[in-house]
Image (cartoon, rainbow, N blue to C red; front, top):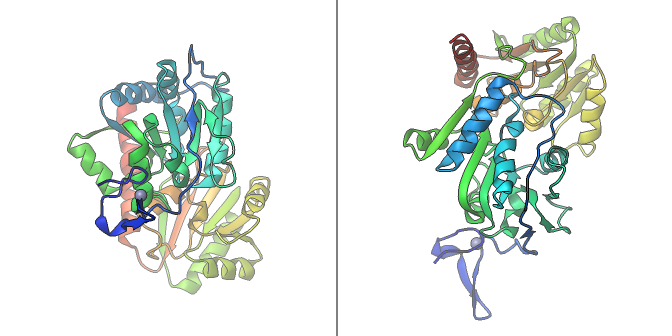
Length: 373
Ligand SMILES: [Zn+2]
């Protein structure tokens, strides 16, 4: 027996209620099922900028690969992951097939739906996330992974953005939803694929399309690592903030630490607990020389022009390799300021810090050797 909504096969979740078998794993997820309108006719893509040669090549590869297998798009932070699948979206819609985008976090869903609506002017794009579930018919859906259950077996292609991010990663229920909505191919977009995905690539169950360079062509900023006791880290941080130009984004391992350091130096601070998170992010984005203390809540999905990054207590276990790669990826993203600075302050050099550094060095090396061919 398999639950049609979440794909559960484990007996312990099934129960009989009023003569009907119900799945207790997904029983809390009730709501209307969405209706996807098929597209007829041509689909044009409107972009305010030109894709780089690397991006165009990757776009074609992704579309070709998706016709026969699942695809892992392994693109460095700032490579323009979303634009890489526009061609696949356009061609899928042109073939009157269905394609959807899913991502774990609600905030990103709303931003992404707006961008897609601009890129595909002839297509009805709809965001589905908590608080936005009253319109359930459209041609292209951007959905939180929590709302995917509204699309049983509806997608020929499902693009899953950041499958390694909280809260999707390791959540069997959400993974089950994703599996049950896609009757065709999955396309995963990430800068930090986990071992499970890389194993599937190795077994040739999935095709990997790698993008090692950002559109502006400059290498990724590689962190410098400084080991020091905590009190000295704070002194080094203060000095770094004083001599560094541009926006300074400082990561601390816990909310308490972030609050403490922000109070100590009179800086602004955000965490997942902040009620006015978006306002504080906007304020920082508008302040060319600001300092913002944050937790891993800002490790992904945000772009600030001319941002420099420092991590305090970078050896803390909350900062795993993927997290540190994402954090370092906040620096040097824009074409105007392609060179960012990344500093890891730590009590000792953790394996995650070293792995992060090696991963970034390898991407830069691969990008460089590819471009000099
Ligand atoms: Zn279920």
